[in-house]
Length: 191
Image 1 (cartoon, rainbow, N blue to C red):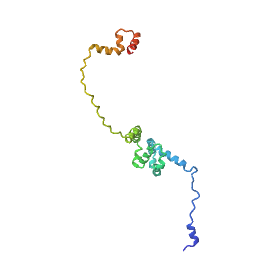
Image 2: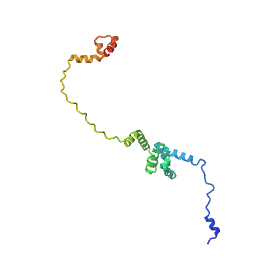
Image 3: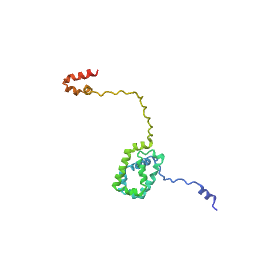
Image 4: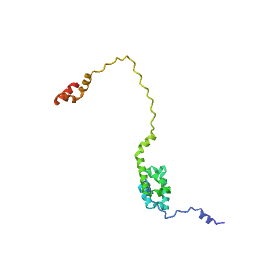
C-alpha cells in the first residue's frame, strides 16, 4: 500500500506549464490573418499560384486547409465578405481539384464560371425567390350593344387631300406659302 503522503501527491491538481504563450491581443491578430487568408481563396488566380508553387504538396498546408473549415460555422461566417472562398475551401479538400488548379486553363475556367455567376446572380436569385404568379385569365370585354350601323359613305379623294394637307407644313411649301408666314398659318389653323 502506498503511504498517505504519496496519495496526496497524486490527488493534487497539476499546475499548468509556466511557459505557455498568451496572445497579447487575445487572438485578434490570428483571427484577422486567418480571415484574410480564407478570403484570398475566393480568387482562382491565387489558388493557381499556390498550386504552381507546390503548397498543395505540403501535408502541413493540407492540414491547415482542413483546420480552416471552421469558417463555415455560423459564428464565423458572418465575417466573410467573399462567400466564394468557402466554396473553394471546400473544393481544396479534394486532391484532384488541387492538382487541376496547377493548370492555367483550369484557373481560367474557374475564373470565367465565377464571373458568370456574379453577372447573373441577381437574376437567378430573383427567379428562385420571387416566382412569377400565373397570369389571371382576363375575361373578354362584353360585346357592345348591337345597334343598326348605317353604312358610311367612302370619303371622296378631295377629303383625303384636305386631311393630309391640314397638318403637314411641307405641303405649304409646295403651295407657295412663304416661310415667314408658315408659322402664322400653323398657329391660326390650330386655334
